Length: 436
Image (cartoon, rainbow, N blue to C red):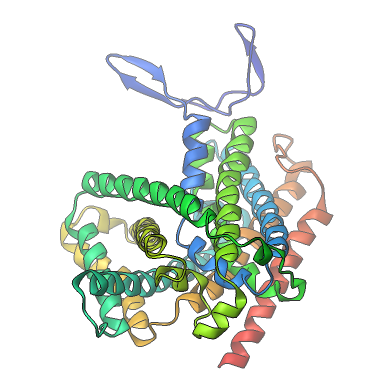
């Protein structure tokens, strides 16, 4: 299972993979490559999450056309940074001679101890910030839906929803075996897809063509960070590289197509929601979230019900993924935690209690959490770090001729990537200082 020299010819076939994933099965070794289709689905599934719920609120002031242009631009940025990360990963595997290398290990090897700690801090901040967002918004939708079904006039305080959501879904993950959680998550994903298609069908009839013509290009700035959250998939890039055996054409195809599918979904979603709710309606209701207005029945009861189902299960699938992400992170830091069932409760408490506590104190933190997570963490993880690591590897290329480029261009492109991410971070820090 050693890395193979690439490219070479065998049986008239050009092999572009870096190594072969083989398994010992039924007394013989068999080649078990990952598929482009499977990894495309992994990228798409990782990208589609609760970030989609916040999109209409930040794109409504600018309108459909400006937000569509910005969304495509942000997608291009995330694709390039994802491909840069894949390039670093492939070359790190070549240098190390390893079949798999994690994000933190890759950063430490390329940028050193300090770089790895910065990425670790950004990773933690991202996961905790998004868990706060998911707990508060998921709890609000859950309590509102239960109150509506049971005919309760006085809806309980928002903190009740935050705690209920955490105990329900966090409790399921704590007591359930991995196979059960996998089946539940698959069912939730099926519900998300079905309800999304239903939303496009029902919502399409509510779209008013005049509302699609609204344009305010100066209002775009506030939407960038949420779009970065919605289009983030970089945490699974090392997995894709390993699954596809370092095969660059397949990796490139999986990342581009896998992120393009959610882009089409987001563009359709954005158009339907903004076409169904006008800026005047938002101002008259005192609610700045178009999705919340529609959930309350602003464009028909059935559309509101379907939107509530879609929202809750989109949040639940994202919640499960990010809890598992933190679980893996802490198990890497504390290796003994994997072997001791007694450490399970402290681990889940470390993951769930801090974001639940913050969400209970400030139940309306959903958009702020997404904003901070998108600008600070994702600008680092999906912008600065991939460009820096690529820069470092390409500098060493004179000493090592096995490095291979996935993204064309030189230092100018890498500088542009880092400058854009740095500007977003500075903008967010200034906004935070004004808020404080």
